[in-house]
Length: 229
Image (cartoon, rainbow, N blue to C red; front, side, top):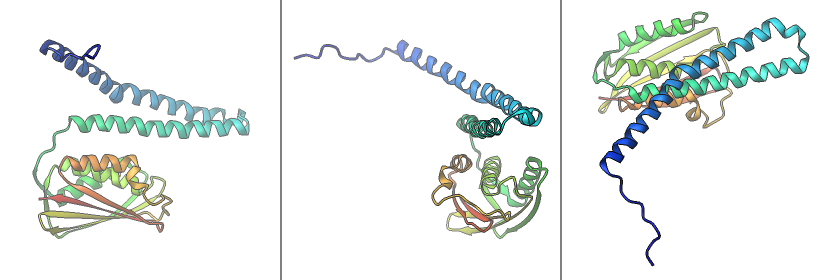
């Protein structure tokens, strides 16, 4: 018995129409991820902060607990919005392959970490046994910033960042050690699921690089980036 109906292949005009519609939908999604959602989440967090500061005395214990839960939920939602925004940026980014001075990279990292965390004190120690790598400097900086944010909570006051490089066969390894004195409570296997680690991994993948992360419970973390040469 013949099938009642068979799906016919799309004609070239229909294929073009479907592709154009998909592109319009993606453009709309990107606009929401880049602008609308971040702005709305910022407004929500600001209102919750005002509620806590100005109305806390009028709230019952249960009311203050509800505000705390709302703040935590808003914080997690903001992280997800940032993740979507960064994934959109990743999708549109084209990495370069050019020589990168690790001394220049270190200076940029120092400046960015101090700009992003002005209330924190940083101590840096760099030992570049392999002085250069080939890749995209913006990609490496973005990935390292994500990894530093994940391994050194912003609540800690002093953060010591140490790094060295070494050449291995067809690659350079950038090994970082972060010590902030804050015990890590991340269970085994969790790092790969953190938003910061996912973003760092995807940034590095643009250069064919990969990352390995280790968290301990004594206030020290480490990660290594392998950059193919």
